[in-house]
Image 1 (cartoon, rainbow, N blue to C red):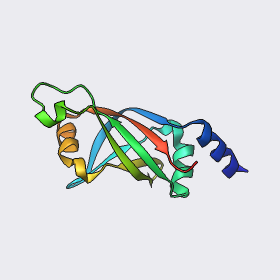
Image 2 (image 1 turned 120 degrees about the horizontal axis):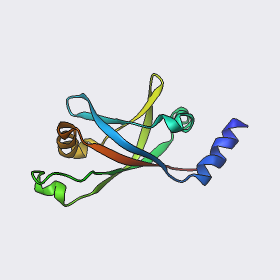
Image 3 (image 1 turned 90 degrees about the vertical axis):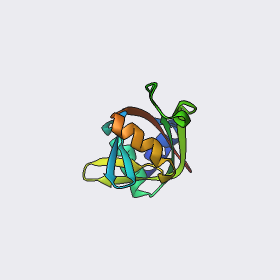
Image 4 (image 1 turned 45 degrees about the vertical axis):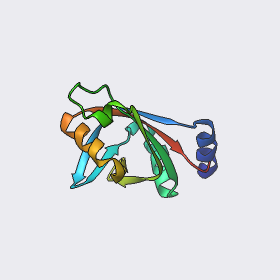
Length: 121
């Protein structure tokens, strides 16, 4: 019954926003973003089912000293990510392909908005 309820909920809600999230460095070259607690029941369901999600990271307004390549983009799409549980919180690991972007934003202590799109529902 609960499984059916979540599937119906996921078909209605096509996207889950998380605003003003900090980029966290977990270790050298590994960055993550914690998801909002507001949807913890949904994150738990997706984590348990090992469902893939697409993540859209919306970059903040950057200062004028930002590298040229960062001034050309305002969002980054990462496909087929998994949501991971860490104690009572949930997180998404950011793609290593964009480590130079994450490193700059981490040092700047910038906040990003993310949109999570569950796949296969």
